[in-house]
Amino acid sequence: MFILLNRIIKSGWAGFRRNSGLPLAAIFIMVLVISMATSLLLFQKTSQFLTQTIQEKLDMYVYFNDELSSDEIMNIQNELSKVSGIKNVEYVSKNDALARFIAKHKDDASLMESLRELGKNPLLSSMNIRAWEASQYAAISSFLANSQFSNLISKIDYQQKKPVIERLSSFSFGINTAGIAVNIILALAAVFVAFNTVRLAIYNSKEEIETMRLVGASDGFIIGPFLIQGVIVGFAASLATLLAFGIGLFFLSPGLKFLLPGFNIFSYFIGNLLIIFAIQLAVGVGLGVISSWLAIRKYLRA
Amino acid sequence: MINFQKVTKIYQSDGREIAALKDVSFEIQPKEFISIVGRSGAGKTTLFKLLMAEEKPTEGSIVFEGEDVHQNRSHLPHIRRKMGAIFQDYKLLPSKTAYGNISYIMEVMGASDEEIANTVPQVLELVGLKERANNFSEELSGGERQRVAIARALVHRPDVILADEPTGNLDPINTQEIIRLLVKINEMGTTVVLATHNKEIVNNLGKRVITLEKGQVIRDEAEGKFIL
Image 1: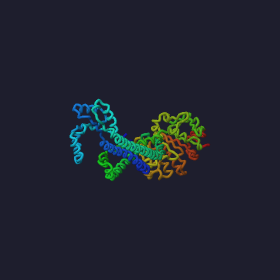
Image 2: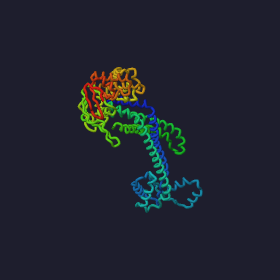
Image 3: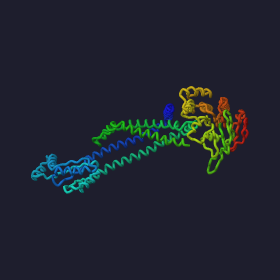
Image 4: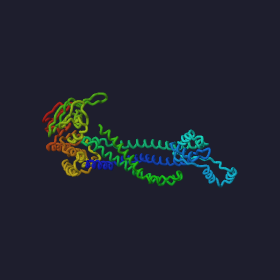
C-alpha cells in the first residue's frame, strides 16, 4: 500500500514537471480563482467594518414625561431586555441630561444665559438605546410605542432619525450584497475556466490513460497521479496568491487608511495569515483535485 | 486457456448494422503460438479488443483462464495483468522513458523497487535496448518503440502475449527481429497470439493459423499457411 502511494506521488510529480506548459496555465487560472475567494473574504471584512462603524454612530432616544423612579427604570429595562437586537440601554436622568447639556454648550454664552433665566431644568429624562443593527430600530420603536409604559413616554426620536437610519441601513446592505454578488459571479466564471483548463490538460492525456488501463493499471493507480498534480497546482497557486496579496496589501494599506480610518487591512491580513492561507489552500487544492477527478472519471468509465 | 464461444460483435454506423465478428468460436491452449490472419477489416483487431475487454461482444462470451472477461469490471485490471499486449501503434506512455514504460507495469503490480531494478535492465537487454533505457518514446525509432512495447508486454511474465499487427509499421529487418523475439518468448513457455496480414511471416512460422474473412472463421489449421 505504502509502495503504491509512494509511486502515485512520484508519478504525479514527474507528470507535473514533464508537462510544465499546461500545469503552469492551470496554476495561473487557479491564482485568479483563489484571488477571487481572498478578495471576497477581505471585502466582507472591510464592509463589515464599515457597517459596524456606521451603526456605532446610530442610536435612539426615548424621552419620558417626568423623572422615573428606580422601580420604573428597572421595569422598563427588564422589558427592553426581552426585545431582541438591543445592544445597550442607558438611563439618562434630568440632572444627567442637564450636566451633559452644560458640558456641551458651556462656551455658548447666550444659551447658558437663557438656561439661567428659565430657572429650572427644562430637559426630560431619557433612555439611550443602541441596537446591534440599524434595521432593528423600527421594531424597537414600535415595541416601546405599544408597551405598558407607553403612557410614561413623551417622545421617541426614531421618527426624526428614521430617514437617516433607513438610508444607512440600506446603503450598508446594498454594498454588502452587491460586492458579494459581483465577487461570486467572477469566482464562478473563474472556477469554470479553471475546470476547463484542467479538463484540457487531462484530455491531452486521454490516450495515455487508455494505455494505462490496457496494461492492467487499476483506476486508483491511474487517477492518483492526476490528483497529485491537482494538489501541486492548487498548492502552488495558493502560495503565489498569498504572496501577491501580501505584497499588494502592504503597498495599498497606507492609502486605504484614509478611506477606512481605524482599519488596517494589511494588519488584518498578517494577523489572519494562517486562516487565509488555509482558505486559499482549501479553494486551490479542492478545485484542483475535484476538477481532475471529474475530468478523468469520463475516461475511466468507458 | 482462451475460449471464444459463439462470439458476435455488431457495430452501429449511421443506423446500419455492421457485423465485425459473426459466431466465432475457437480455443487456444497454453504455450501455443497462434496466428490470426485475414484482410484488413476481417475482424482481427475486434477479436483482440474483445479479448482485452476493451469492447463487449453483442453475443457470446470470451473466457480467459476460466473467467469470462466481461463479467466483472472491477476484476478486469487483474485479468489484463495476465496478458501482455503489443499494438501496431505501440501505445507507449509519452511521459515516460523506455525504462519507465517497462517498469510501469511492474509498479502497477506492486513489485518492489529492487525487483524492478533487477528485471527491467534484463528485459531491455533481451530486446536490445539497454543503451536506450533513458530515452523517451519520441526519441526512439519505430522498431525501437515496438521493442519497448514487447519488453513491456513480457516484463511481468504474463500468461499470454497478444500482438496486434506488431510489425505493421516496420521495415523488413525490424519485422524479422520482432517476430524472432515473439518466437523466443513462445519457446520460453508463453502463449503468443499474433494478428497479422503479412503472408511471409505466417508461412515461415509453420504454426497454427486461424483465418478470418468478413468476421467469420473460415479456416483453423494446426500448421497453417496464409491463404486468402
